[in-house]
Length: 193
Image (cartoon, rainbow, N blue to C red; front, side):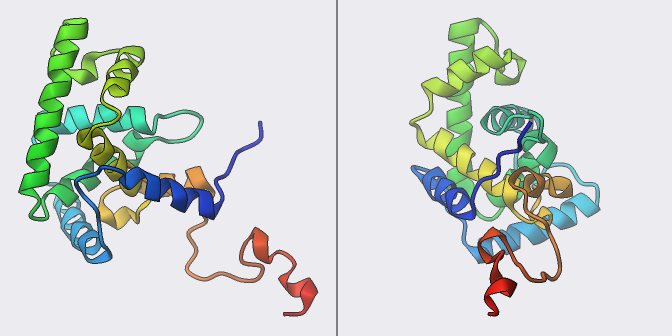
């Protein structure tokens, strides 16, 4: 089986598209702060700092449908929910409230459609059906944005546990690179540059 890799340009375009209607947009200082907080909490073996255990279970199930586990690791293996906890803890009470409201609406839809109180208790087909029904909401755009950011950020930010996100896109995390740097520089030495 041939492994498909995203080009760098396609990857960054997907990140831009993921912001859509997200109520959270992250800057480098925000990421660094989330990184520091998340790392300290994980090293101390602490539980979630911002989101509740119920929110963590539900958000984890949603992110696992956004980037599911296939032949490669998904959002669950990357620990995206820990990244979300760190980001939401950075003075984002208003955005957290929007996510709480969206989660309650999703859970209400789960009860109405399937007579099940929690999203994570649904099977994959049912989960996908509910996600499709909310795919144009700020709640979904925000979770999708945080899922992608957490999947491919530095592990110190709380997500991308064991660099699984890097493995998915074929990125090699090296401290230093040697020529040729990537496929577009493959003929660098031959050109004499």
